[in-house]
Amino acid sequence: MPITAFSASREIELDVTQLLEDLAQRTQRPTPGKAVAIPDDWKRFILDDIECPACFRRGAEVVRASTSRETGQAIRQAYFRFPTSTGGEGHHPFCDFAGNVPADHVPENLVQFSSAKDGVSKAIRELVCRGIQLGVLGQRDIRAMREWYFQRKVASRFVVTLDPRAPKWIESLQRMRAGPWNKASEDIVLSKAIIEIPGFDLVAAAREAVTRRHHALLDALMEKRVWMHGTAPRIEKLAAEYQGKAVFDPSSLQHEYQRTQVLATFICRNYAPVASATSKSDAGVSVKGARPLLAFSSLLLFISEWDLNRASNLFAQIASDVSAVDLSLGNVIGLNPFHDFEAWSALKLVQGLMPFDSEKFDAKAEVERWIGETKSTYGALSQDSN
Image 1: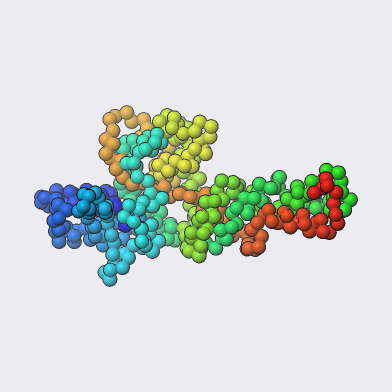
Image 2 (image 1 turned 180 degrees about the horizontal axis):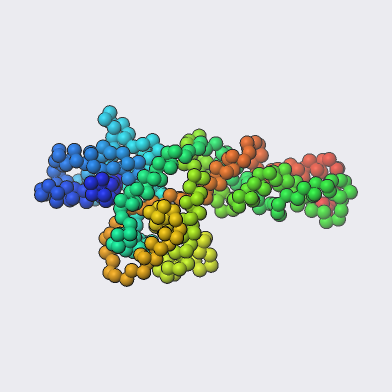
């Protein structure tokens, strides 16, 4: 249940209070108080004019804020709901607001530019305000971009079947592996004589044997530059939460993602207000967690038809403006279409590489089993080889 929605007639995002004040101004009538019913003609207008900010369905109704009679404190925030004619759910099934979500729910891929809590978000809010003030971008562009993203999300889906245990298992294999698989290493056949070499590292041999067993998977991940270190827990959570469900296929936005990363890194390195608020060691790494920066960069690229030169010049035009800026223009909600992009991309890639055997998802157990089988095959070993 969104707390803001898009007015098709005004081409701006409004919350319930702003909408009612706007309607009062339009109709030259007083804004109805909390205990006063919304006029029927206003209700009909809202039904036809207000769109869901995520799936763009119309047919909105207003739910007013309420307070406790005992304490006077707010117990319900005002929001918009989109019921069907039969009283059911009016959102598209793939909408971020579909289902039983709370009134204050903000989808993770949406960015409130007005909520500037750190150096990066404050700098981006000012850039957004300057861009709107200069006429370079507007709320209609933001709305158009969200619709473009929603249509891509609906058209590009895949069903999650990845076993949630797989990411940490792969992470363990990647940590154990010294480098790419060298087929020539198979020419050294293990024997009792080799096992009994003083100082022979049986554990290292076991790890090599286990990772060699899964070399096709590990080589494919290395070729795609996919590493589970640091991302395995997130992929595991996504696989568990969305198991058996159809989700957005991030690979359909690979081209746009790469260009957004380039522009975001360029801004991060060359625009002082952002550069001073991010890591100096690696701007490419620092932009990964900067949702407002990615939202702003992707918006510039979207209105530039994903042309990096055009987008960078639009940024230069905005960043070079030194006139006084109206920060109230930044009370808009942007879109970061690449939220969890790397985790979803890795999940889909791993899922498609091989049919997983559920008995294999314990690298440590595989190593221990190999050691046990080797000891059994070659008899008792010296203390140095244990």
